[in-house]
Every structure is written in structure tokens, then in C-alpha cells.
Image (cartoon, rainbow, N blue to C red):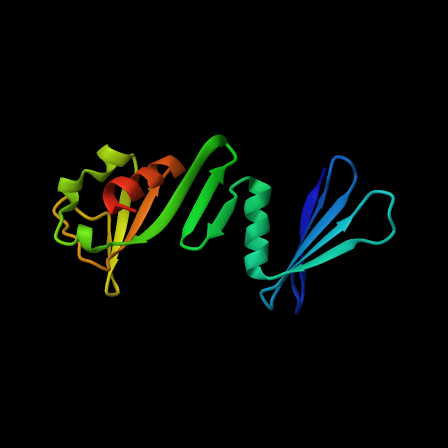
Length: 161
């Protein structure tokens, strides 16, 4: 099993890898920003080719490393290959009238739900890791992190939805 990289003048850089089974894989990072993936199976004469956008290449990289990211509306779920039973969700919510004027410390979000508020965006201004004295306004965008069950409890207990 070997690997090497080769500069392709005017085109980009090619990385080659031969698997234990004898298949050959080449990834070409083109100067244009696109990526090409070639697979030549042992015993075959011609390779299979996939042309990937940068976003598709990042997605494939995440899949291959086990750090799968699944976007759904305003949420992302992350799984880690070394921690196969851990799935972390990051979700955004809009603060409703019921949160307006309430202080983060008084809500005890983490204690009550297991979820953690990591940031708030208010009219284009971002507060990362808001202090316990932070007071919510209707329309604030909240960034919450936790397991799926924690986020469901947050929705019910804190947001009332």
C-alpha cells in the first residue's frame, strides 16, 4: 500500500494511493477549485471518474472519515468515527415572546434540558457563550447544542413548542 503526490503544472496536484487489494485511487485537486476522483480497480483497463465540487469533496471527506454531517433546515448533526455512539446536534431557534426579558441564568437551560446555549445572534450582532446575565429579546437567534433528546426537551421546556 503506497501513496505519492505529483504536481501537475498548470492543472493542480494529484495524490495517488494503492490499496492493499491492489486498487488504485487518484485524487486531483484542480487549480479551478474542483476535484476529480479516479478509481482503477485491480484487473481493469480503465478507471471510473467522478468530478466533484469543493462542497462535494468536503462531504465525501466527512463520510470517509466517519464525521458525517447531515444538514436539515437549520440543524446539523455530527457523528465522530472514534465515538460511534455519540451524535451531537447543533440547532438554531428564534426566541419567541415567552423568552423576551428573561435572563439566561434564571432559565437554567443546561440543568433543565441537558442542552447548551452556545451563541445568540441579535440584529446582526453575535454573542458567543453568553454570560448568565444575558437577557433575551424576541427575535434573537439561539444556537443550541446537545443530543437529539436534549433539544426536544429544550423545545418543550424552554420554548414551549
